[in-house]
Image (cartoon, rainbow, N blue to C red; front, top):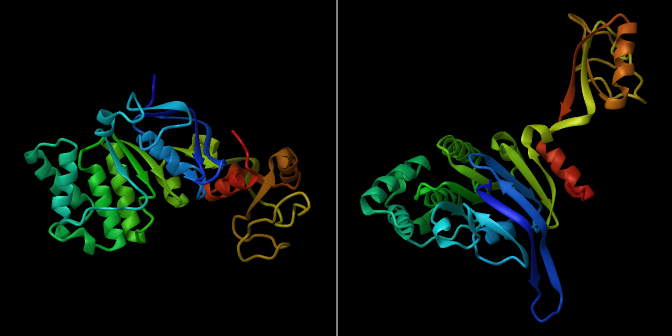
Length: 316
């Protein structure tokens, strides 16, 4: 069954003016977006993210391969009318906010009565209802980002494609944006989110793809990607804090205590170990008369995963 957005072995080359050389922006890119998910699309500058988005929208054609948007080949006009798109660099006509939204809604064939109601709804959602009659040319960058999201929502789309939607927002506005995307997802919309703010991606995305130099290097569910399989966190009780040699194990994470001190109170000690040393570590705790309280894989941040993959250039 096809997804909401499908790339099938897509390659895109760009020619260099006045030269026979070509630059490869995407290579053998395959991806399927599932209906109803929030999907994070990550990569360094120049990785090929915006190229992939522009191909999906039909702004350009692939050098090879193919793709489908809402079941139709890339570039199908009827399919584009069912999506909402926010570009990385927002460029809007200089009109009052409400009139601007009505203009974009009209381009999608919305009827005047429905458009009037919908304009008020999305202005309220992005917290710009008090600026409805103000020309967007006088908006701050953050306000332009929000009115840009409003135009992406105006036609009540099935799929939202957002390229760096939080790049110009302050922390409070990012929280508002995050809640808007979660609300849209709860209403049944699929969200394709390209962003450099990895903490935001980590909080709301169901799945994540990482692109490096035009190639897909990682794809998976966010929670699974953040679980380390080579290091484990151990919490024990009733052992000295210096029970493990630093040559084999990491420094015990004991706040405010010297390495060779015993813990007061319930005597908990927390430290991390390599996966290969797990059995030996547990046996040592028991041999010292201690109690193992928990053993869990170390949870990494998305930033750590991203840096590791894009530095090594690993391929899926």
